[in-house]
Length: 181
Length: 181
Image (cartoon, rainbow over all chains, first blue to last red; front, side, top):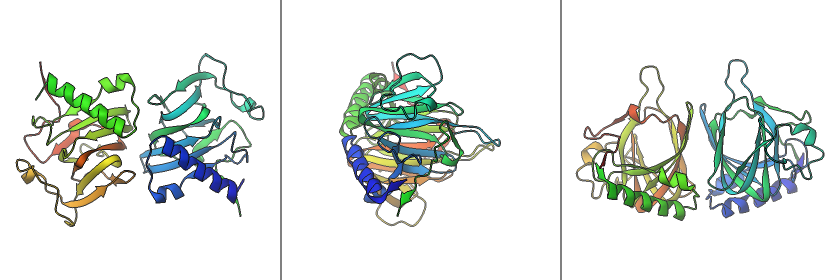
């Protein structure tokens, strides 16, 4: 749960990252930035700031801002009830992102400060994305990602985004941010 | 048909537009920019410069550079053989784009200098896209678009790109650029 001040402060901070990345938003878009704390009320460590450009029945495009060291916790877009899970391409626009997927552990995962979450960050094959670099994840692939120490701005191109179908490793997670009135 | 010098000169020029738009590309991507003259050998007037980020069986994301006044000629992504046509969202990142779709003629279409093509530019409802503005086209919608006098950089988010299914108004058009050896 975030209080209104935390929400508004994160939204304004996210706008400064879009600016650093040279991404131009309309005033209406700036108001519609979503702050996702995954229900953990620990936004600085676990969270993303999201602007959805378009999400039709087939295609979704969004920008994700991550503050320094912020982590999107491990999850999977699973195929269920005959509906294929989401496939997604992450393209780093600014800063640096460490993306973790199944496979050989090829580096020490960036887990500093995440003691409270580390048991639910299992996949450990690291892919580093610098600006202009991208990676495509097919459905049913566990993954988590973390911004480097300057933060990051990441474009996501995917099939339809259906956050309520996501499965998270950490049972404490609820994808929908509550805002305290 | 383009000769090798024209191709290379357009590619290098396109890179300068990506730079103006603050879009960072890898060296490999810079080499893979496609120059589309639609077979008309009149690239300054009819053409686009395209970088495909990703094109899976479901989703495509690309960037389009348009030089000043350059036009993408009228076409449709049609549903045929039971395969739904491409849906696409154009998001202006830099410069200005005039997008034309079916509907009421609400302005004088930007046809200056296009005398040789004007009979194949029929739809006339104008949508102006400035940086940060976007428009989503569903399949089976005739459309054409033209850059303003500074040029434009436009992101396209869409379902799978299958250029060979596109239908163009102008029967002289061939989507595949030939390069003279």
